Length: 550
Image 1 (cartoon, helix red, strand yellow):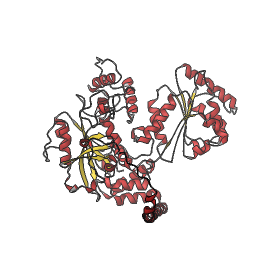
Image 2 (cartoon, helix red, strand yellow):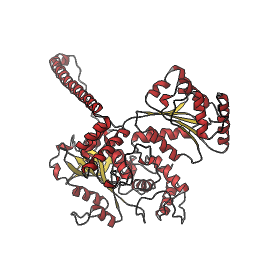
Image 3 (cartoon, helix red, strand yellow):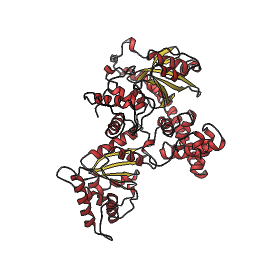
Image 4 (cartoon, helix red, strand yellow):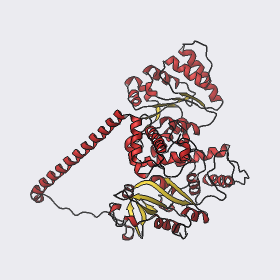
């Protein structure tokens, strides 16, 4: 209903497990890495657990996008089955024919064994995925373990991935399932998104749906985190309902009152009030604990003060060895909070953009006659406006403009021009300071703007199946990264093996492995092949992300 109103190509907050919409937080990247490791292993079980709506199924769908197309896949989504019913379901998924009305475990097992041996002879890997595996009975889990006994002299013929809620971990720790637990070669628990990830998650889904403008303001992100508790499925449902409410009201963007109304509709009035009572009780407990800590600290301080003279008589002073320090020129200026700086209102985006353009050797012209991105494009550069974490910026390794907020919620901007260990070099107005990353993160929701240099002939994102002269550049970049001679190709088509190579590169780089040649993927390709100027980190410092074969 609201799709045309906001200009979406498709609904951004569908709860369907579409791999294109997966936001690869650090947790999701690690979860996917565990699944990939398990699939490429020698067989056994892989365990992925998480709360309802944490994204387990979506991560698994993402895995299926990466594995060879000729793999034999069986996906069981309703595991409330007996052992015989499960074996029949496995046969159905693999396309194995069996006698009608068969109830013999041996017949099913022999047929599956024959199928797996044939698949192995054809060079196929067989994968069985069971969703909602916490519903499996002990007997069925034991039958699954017996299926992994099907093996050659070198490795097992069947790889099994179990997706389930946290209680699955408890079930597998029981003594009667000890043999199965010992066959788990990789396990990972997927938790909720962090507060920092929320904005990136929402912006990512809006972007994939075709809209890059600000639909949810920065101030609503904290509310989304609080209402959803970081659970992706709840974020989707709440945001979807909030967009509908915004459309009905004829507003341009989602505000806090609309978001709260949407949450009431999603949870129901009773559950919504109960949830807020829990939050209030939790806050009261935290405040009470803090007060108790202050009272205890004061009492402890007074006690120590009274005891100090007596203690001094029996204490031997030892000289303190000074801790090693940086040379004076490299010492960052102490700064505990950004809000301690004066005149935060005057630290404008224009000043920050000027600093970033200077890093590229370009003079920035202030004013509204020509936009910053248009000025960048005139010099062969492009703008990337996105949401990320400091780790994400470190990986991109490009100077960036950060959108920050002071103690009163007012926005201001700073130019990030260098990284060094746990500090960052920020230009705030006319001042340049080394500030700890932790202090910056307290005032940053992840929004940034950076400049990057696209390959020649690049116009827009290139999707699998597309055609562009950029493909020649891509083939040479991949060759350089893998230490192979440059290719003299005339192929402009982006498909087949080339898409597969890009997906592998994206996965190895921690990007969404969708095969799309967008800004981030092109920046990573450029950086990995050695072209990384200007950069946030010195390549010779050992901190920067260098070229990596995949």
